[in-house]
Length: 278
Image (tube, rainbow, N blue to C red; front, side, top):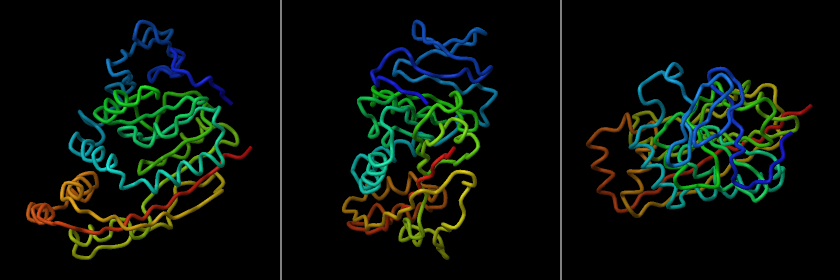
């Protein structure tokens, strides 16, 4: 169990991705006893994704997706989801323990969980997204890395969130302390169904029966559903661009969306809260 003062200091807790030894921040560079070194970027984040751990030159969401998601979220369309997540954290979370956003993107959900008493970390494989997060939310700690090998010691976090990111139970359980919580957010049946109908001839509802979580205990499950009404085509285009649907959308469809003065689409989220019980 880790307790923190919550003040932004140099006592950041990372492990070296190469040898798993503790990293220390000295003169804006993280280094371990084996002399592996990782420079802190001017925005404040650190890249802990060695080239041998990359599967492509620029892994993760591309710049277009990152910028579209940032603009869309900034306009408050997912605010009911935020409210539900913060309510769970307020009810169940120990705000003196470290918090982790797995697949943090631009940090939109990450920073809203910052309290005066906790340390908040975010990791994402997309450097473009992490750069934006670190520049914008100085009170949190962001790093580029892979969720498959997190740069943290065992039992480090009291609370983990995974929002539309890969859910790797074994690794999440490793860094989650006993009695700590994992929150997952996945699409419920009707999420963005109206948008899918424009793209797929036979649009299907999301399958909510599958879950990769086997050993953690399900404590709470809730569904957040509401209609999003778009009066500006820019918001609708940003929604499309931040989803996998964008790769299936034709130029004709995109032009059709740009011409729309109004459009309604369902937001439908499934939130599950798990606990690592002793």
